[in-house]
Length: 591
Image: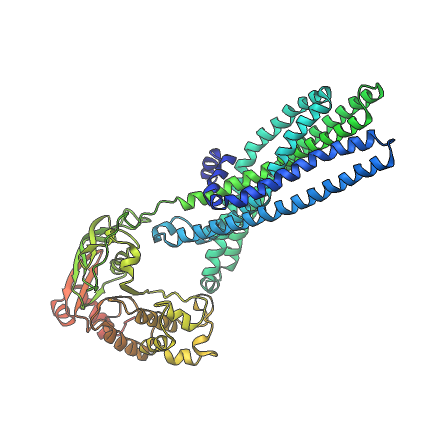
């Protein structure tokens, strides 16, 4: 991890923040208003020392003149307060708006990524980028950039007015600048690397936590709590050490810069005091110069502080841009073809060879050709790892084959928009997903516009109505994160009801009844048979009892089709299917 961090950090520059402009551009009006408020506050701040000089030098003048001076000072204070409030409002609102847009763009992008993308990055790290990294950017847009620009204006304006007040003393002040800039540049480079490394460790920590919490039952059942805690503690400690080093570097830079600036100011003031005693300048001029010198010194100190924040935000921006620009192995074509309507449901695999990106040396499917006619029910059987579920993955176009083509109604899936052909399919996965909402909304996920009556009818068809009705609030009962309140069989029946409600021309069942008891399995099997009438159905199953009535059974072994036919034909033929049938039906070891 350290190597990749260094490689990525070596190209890091604060200029990376320019990548945020596309998100800021739509709100140019707000930027202009914030800029005007910023210029107003900086200008008023720079005018204030001039008023102070007049007061000091004219202190012996009439009381009426003094009243005018202090009245003007009060007006300046009012302008400063109003401008600062407006700047805060526009800048903070802009920051919140831009970060909300960035988070939405990131989520939209990630949600459409293929499973191959998530083989390379943990879900927790994705969430870290959406939350932690965008929070850093919020602090910059909503505060740091505004403060930095204000201090730049104060620095430049202060230097000009310093020169007008006393060219001699200003020359001495400018001698301090190189001494201040050198540590900012030298330590700033180290800070860039440390900031990026710190963010990477934070993301890694989030990834570890998310992975463990998503599998908390497995962790507890294998009594692996101590090891998991140790792993998380190790990553978290590395994150802390990285942050500590970054903080130390930034603290050292701040100490050096502020000391050099104020040491220089003290030296300049010493010379100024001598000039006042010699009558070269007035007391009011010296006070004015002192105030401007303090403003300049404060601006330099603030900029050195903010520089570290900008470095961190630049790193966060690079990480977000990486994700927004990440290439996906599966994408929609520039000019997609439309799926012919009405959808017939013909599924064709033509010479398909496929290897998962994480296992490029192993072929999950090897030169597989298969045609499923519209309305046909085809069962895919075979030992684990034979390639059955991979067929469904390719039909949903979660992946693309390295060779051959997958077609629906004669159109290559790669030539269509994924959303177009996926609307024609309903999937019941082997590991059903239950969302942290009500039973009703979990089923309605299959077709959001469905009525309550349609939801209940789908639940009855999936043999889920009785257990849902028995829940404390019935269909409105909250099912918990990932359905923790339900048994495995109940989760599967919810998923089947969702697929039934979708009412799609192509139905994909991946071990859809594996977690059901015999009675529920029979009820669901009857529901699936009714649902399958007039639809194309592909069933992946280990339990052969669930596929005996399929129109055709396709036997897979080692990524290839080794046999095809009806149950009786395959049993009579002998071979792998007959051996599996003998084990399950004769010896009773099904499951």
